[in-house]
Length: 239
Ligand SMILES: *Cc1c(COP(=O)(O)O)cnc(C)c1O
Image (tube, rainbow, N blue to C red):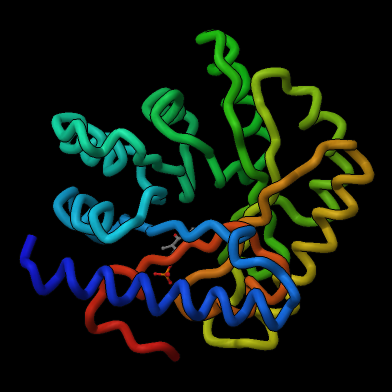
């Protein structure tokens, strides 16, 4: 990777961390509560290595095949042992085995069916899979995920899936609308509270915030922001 690109990644990371820190202060939170994930779905393994050198340790991928490609490419590099990948995209049932055991967290458990299927396959392997429930807070038809009502009404069933460890929720806000983003993130935070009461689980992770809306997400309580373009794209300009 070119020196100039590595320098870009490091400068950009420092600027992002400053903005996270400012947003956290505005909400009387500590920036340490917010994990910065680099979404590497649009770049190759070399860019991931460069991002690792710039300080990133957690990465997100949305396609199992691409995840496998990156893991294979990175396996040869012994310095990358602290690296983790999360699955953050739509997961088809026939791809579950490709992902199991290869990711820290599956953030995109978007339906009861998928939850059951993952649990069943994990049980077969004798492992427990940390997951987030993906919730469609904004109600946009284009978005996948549980509806808030569904996640509450099914909470007991989901918790009873032995091979899943439910760590929190993940959501995405409507694009290019700051007010709608804020409503989505505060809705996610409130839903997590309610789900905590119903399940008794700690649900430590609230995964929300992308390149265009991560400061709003941090102000509203996000513990994990998933940034793609602002991390990797030198042409990126905020909306
Ligand atoms: C692509 C993607 C991101 C990152 O989006 P940017 O706007 O590029 O920051 C975050 N979360 C999910 C689920 C994604 O698919």
